[in-house]
Length: 201
Figure 1 (cartoon, helix red, strand yellow):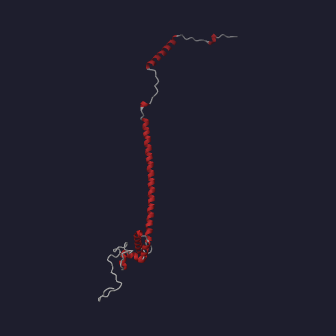
Figure 2: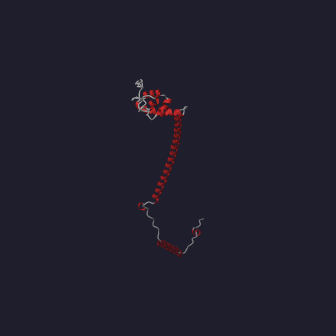
Figure 3: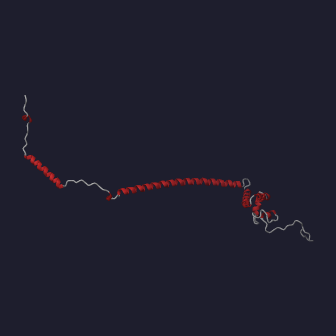
């Protein structure tokens, strides 16, 4: 009972704590020490709880938090707050519309990534082919240089044949001239075959 004027005390009055959470402030109730909303709705987050309460209801949120393990309750509250805000912004689709938009963007990005990978693979193949051609040309040029710039000291050639000198040519000419002159000194005799061979009757 609370004292009123003559000292009467009203029954059921409980003073509000100054450290009440946002849920208890919004619901206008006393925040108990083990309040399930206190760790996730601070005293300055009244708008956050108001959106969650408008979409899901305080009792439903309390039941969800009781069923969820304690280490996952913070993520659950954040998810409920996001879904509530999306539902208030888009009453028809809610968070499903945002999820569908993100999925469409993800598909577009995956398509662009596949195109980029395909182009990169083709450019890499062209670059590898060009590199192979360059190395082939370089190796062929180096081998040709090795062919034309070999060491002469390592090559043994057969000896050249001995050709007659100019003096030998002069001696041969003189011998031929002497032979011709000696043949002219002898008289030439003409033999008549019909005279030497007798007739046989």
